[in-house]
Every structure is written in structure tokens, then in C-alpha cells.
Amino acid sequence: MTTRRALKLTHLLSTVWFMVCVGFILVLTLRQVGFHWWLIFSLSGHSVLLILLLISLYLFALFRGVGEAQQIEVEHPLTTTSYYMGFYVAAPLLGGLAGILGMIGVVDAAKFLLGVALGTLGTTFIVWVVIDPAVGLTEMLMHASRKHRAERLAQAEAERQARQERRERLLAEAFSWEERDRQRWQQKLRPQAERLANLLACDTANFARAEQEAADIGAEAWRLGGLGCMRQLHDMTIAIYRESQHQQAVDYILYWWDGIGDWRKPPSL
Image 1 (tube, helix red, strand yellow):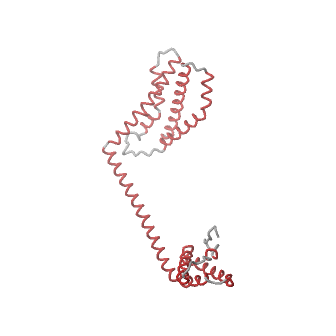
Image 2: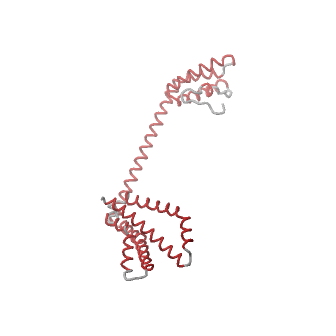
Image 3: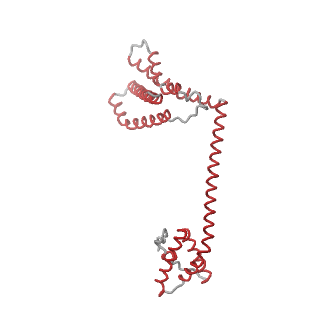
């Protein structure tokens, strides 16, 4: 059996034993204050689903911590060892054993079991709440630990800055390529934009022919540079129309180009 598997199994047994001890103390306390058995089991029945859910979450969180600990051995030379992890997860079982040894000679079964349960809870509390945080804090205050942590954080920050600079460089290159495309399209699209501006000013009799010609121009723009090229041609056309006609254009292009490539007319049209 591997060390990791042994730790998980030990932790499972410890958790089950810990919950049994808590349940025993709770039931015994309720009995001592006068609650009847039927009321105790009734209260437990209503909350059994919640208890099972909490136990499941607890086991998952601690199993994950045992199996996939992210602690670094240089920074935590003691708590990352298998011996310490075994001691940590076995704390409830060790507490139960200490309770048994401490209650040797006690004849009353209820007192004996209560002593074992209290030994379990006390040991678990001392190990998990007092000893473990104190040991972890001591490890973090060690010179080697602080030095390695500072170096690790500095390296992580340097890598983050490098990724940020790489993203900014790629973004700048993308903008540069886009600007070069826009300048290249500006020269090629000028005649088509002027033609489209004239088509916008056509009369009703020539509307169908204007629509067909505008669709052909839009398809050519799509083949040249996709949706970005079509948008640039559209903007150029509207600007030329306003300069030549000195009035707001009726933007038929939004409708004429609907369905060409990725161009879609606004929902209101």
C-alpha cells in the first residue's frame, strides 16, 4: 500500500471515529438533561441529510489536502513529511487510544466511553487547532523558508509580468496588422465606396439593379478582408455620400448586404 493511500485510509477511519465520538457525546448530553430516546432520534432524523452532506464536504476537502498538498518541502520541511501527515490525520485515533489508556480501571461503561470520546475530541482539537498552526507558523519564520518563499514569489511575479508583456506585444502586433489592412483597404475600396454612394442616391426605378450591384460589391469586400473590410467600406460610403449630397443618407447598405458573409442587418430592419 502506498503512503498516499495509507494516509487517505487513515484519515477516513479517523474522521468516522471523530464523528462517532461527537455523536456519542451529543446523545449522552441530551440524555443527561432529560431528553427521551425517541426525541433524540427524531431530531437526528431531520438533520441526517445535512450531517451526511457536511461529512462528505469535510472528507473531500481534507482528502484533497492530503492527496494534492501544494506545500513546498523547502518552506515546510516538517509538515510535508509522511510521518507528520500520518500523525496529523491519525490524531482522532490517537486521542481515542489515549482516552482508553486514561480510563483503564473505570467500571462504569458510560463514563469509560465518555472518557474515550473526550480524549478523542481533546487530542484532535490540540493537534489540528493548536499544534499544526504553530508548527506551520514556525516553519514559515525559518530563514530558509522565508528566503525560498521570497524567491518563489519574485519568480512568479516575473513570470506574470512576462506573460503580460507578451500579451501586450501580441495585441500591439494585432493592432498594427489591422491598421496596415485598413490603409491597404482604404486605397482599394475608394472606387467601390464612391460607387455605393451613387447607388444610395438612386431613384425607385433603379432600386433593384442598385441592390444587386451593391450586393456584388459587398461580396467582393467580404472576399478581400471579411467583415472588417465590409464595415470599413460601409463607413467610407456613408462619409462620401454625406460630403457629396450634404445630407443624411438612407442606409440601404445595411439591408442590401444582409446574409453576405457574416454581415447581418440590425434587428429593427
